[in-house]
Length: 216
Image 1 (tube, one colour):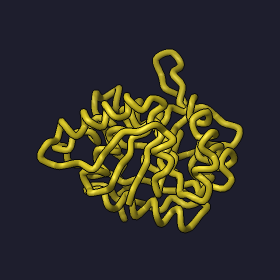
Image 2 (cartoon, rainbow, N blue to C red; image 1 turned 30 degrees about the horizontal axis):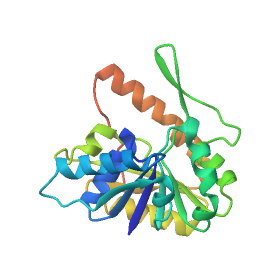
Image 3 (cartoon, helix red, strand yellow; image 1 turned 90 degrees about the horizontal axis):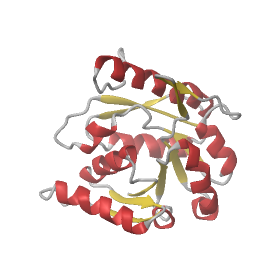
């Protein structure tokens, strides 16, 4: 599989891209500036010379040419990133890992969007794409450290059965991650908002926590 990550040079995007490449997935990190994406990809490859990671950098347009596209851009600029790529994303599985969060004083709070979630907003902006939500609660630093073992659940939601199946298969291909079917895209609102809780816990306990559902 070839996966492109829009906004893939940020901590979350590059960390997830690194993990996917370590699992043998071909990855293109996208950026508004192609040289920046190329430099970040080269930095990742250079950090793990014994792994021959299949990861390259390109402009967001190049990342959008992949079979599956992940939106990893900060939420404020995410729609501005995807809208010019609308025709390239037509019919594709597009996975949103975006959470709309805002710092208020010393706390991180979820932002209430008109469509309920960013995933829902993305579906409205890209009506021809097959939207899924996933990868919201994974610590970027641990994703980027391939010596760090993971044991995390990834909650996947979508209204498109094929998009959900593709996304869950992608999650399952990454060692240490377990996909869980979290239902329809309407559940993305609660999933995205819970990211603020994860961040607050990490700050309070000076930790990098994962989501793990017991009893399954």
